[in-house]
Image (cartoon, rainbow, N blue to C red; front, side):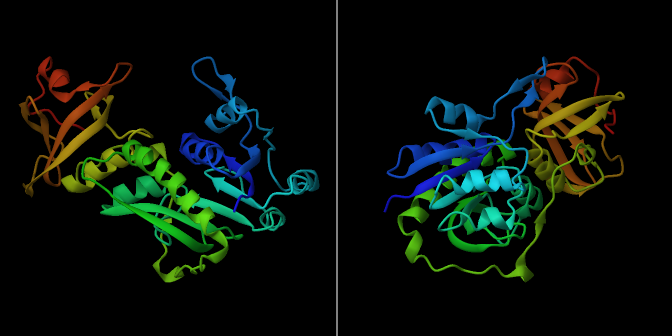
Length: 308
């Protein structure tokens, strides 16, 4: 069955699902995305990735500041959509909006609900040491990612997965899950979430990006990978911020000299954590491009120095 679909999304994660709909038998009648925002050094107003794709296909683009006004709600109703597909849109949908499409609003969420409801499910899954994550297609309700689940696809989380790597794997998986769901939408049994199993994926902040060397090595490395590409984990070397893009946890005992760089070799520089060692592989000094930790340290007498 072919549906009339309104698509709502903003960042790069939303692009693959929109492209999948455009390539399918379904009709995308309009695209909602957040208003253009300043970006880059020139702070030039820049359309979202979703808007850019929509314009390439001559789709109507709507960019309301919010969806609470009667005007915005009437605008959606006039589109006469069967379904609204929402993917990282970034605006709250009032109940009047949720009730407007004939078959309601579907959300593509980047976790295996009810685990990791909220703004940063990809990053929090890595940080927590989860061994798998995935995509959940959810029938939206007025709660925060609390709607009934319709379909799931799973993917493992590898030890070296950064948030960017996992993001890039989950986006096309979301597109696949969406099409699978639409193909059998009106016969899929909805599964209510078990709220007792839910956990919240809080939005990331720059304040939590500084590495805590007193933590164990595995915790530190998970955070380094979870915070890549933003806010990017960092430490202080001689009082200057040093971003850490890639690292490896090495088993070992507890250390007295926490944060001390104790071994340098081609593979990287090993730093004493609260327990075990963290091997820094790729770093980025302030104002410079990413480089291997070996190259950064080779030009400096780092062994015995302590990172903060």
